[in-house]
Image 1 (cartoon, one colour):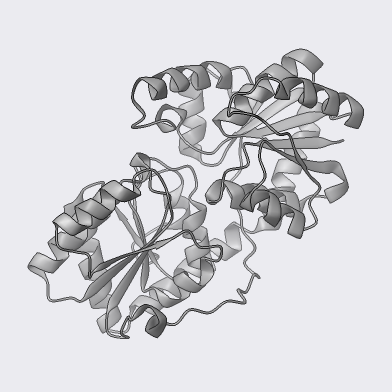
Image 2 (spheres, one colour):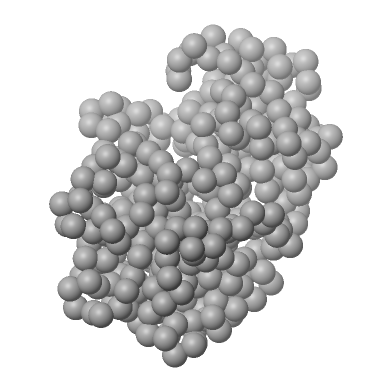
Length: 367
């Protein structure tokens, strides 16, 4: 059985981690990673010994890629195309039509929000993505909520497999970043938000929450923002307008995020929608508790208030959780929450369990 995983190749966040974790956990001789462009993703995959093929495009929707894809599927005798993301879904749909190969897709996000904030073009791409997505042979949903969402789209239950994300909890980063490197003191409460600057991530809620904390509390809180994206300039302007530029640090893209989890007191996630946020698993691996909106499969990771904070999507609720977490730190109790978080996730969401579940599903719907 040979499986070709397809992705646009410009992914550097949770989607990239998900795919690399999966490919590392399954016999490499059976897996090939196909990307539409070279970059960080391709470099990391090759460094891990994953066979990686780049199908070059002159533009994002250059359909000449289809002939290259068709030829590759025939020559390599591919049994399954497994797509990740809207652009890969489009080409997976056409490749299945041309070759008869089985097409599976992992639903990493709510497709209704994939092109949020992109005007008329965004609406057009959303409609196209939704139409194509409903044509796959099989679906991997990374949370029960996403399974329910797919059922709402009219997709039959037997075509959906729920498999939670997993990461390597034995991973130890070689990098180290100290608070002094960022001019942070040991007394400050440091929040970390690792997310691309995109409307669906709702960074403005984090900024508004920090503004509230400053107004009503004496807690010294700093927010570290790791990531890049189209919304960065707007958010930088918002931070400046609220006079928070000395309290919120924009750190850009970071190849290694584990050192930032290590120095932070808590991780923050304010998304409108998520599937099964890998950023929270990465945070738990370092024993860093999380403050998160109630999205995707976070309740599987944070089963009760002893393991972290799940809040509604308002800046007031987020601010209240930040202040409570700061109080726990002052009492020496926050680290215990982080350790419970790590123990719970490491026992349930290992990378090998994740990869084995996907591979067993392949065998079922191919045979």
